[in-house]
Image (cartoon, rainbow, N blue to C red; front, side):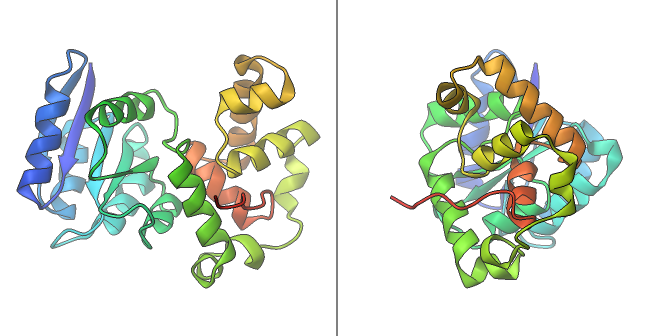
Length: 230
């Protein structure tokens, strides 16, 4: 059973998400909260697999709540997914830097919401959709990106690169462009299991909490170049 906490100060959004998720036989909503501080408390009390977190909330915003949760070793199994109103929210990449496992727009389709919960609960990051690639490209090539040490502000080389094999550096670069394991496997003509192995080893060496953090590290240390925006 996948345990979920929904944190959003908008009752319609919060209750709507909880109702949809609660219909699934393998997912249980263990708490609904309205502030970031309540979200942190709920994470400690319920130890959910997934916490759907609105970015803008009273008392304590979703960014700081995410930072507190991901910084707590006791909550390492809690995966935070940010909820945002717009596809390209200025705060989303900051949330990924703080350790969020991905993001969803609030007008996402019900099937996509359910899939997202299952994907994140399984330990994967919500970084496959085209909109995420657009987000990465925007922040990696703009002044906003420079502010968070991404893209052109990153050093051309990094000592971290020396920790990786050539294949691992290559896979980190492709993950940084938003490619899924399946897409990488297709490029390399190898199995998804082989790609997962390379990704897993790179994450371990770079101390990345999950795939989302691996993307951030890739840009921070010049291991990835932004994809072209469609």
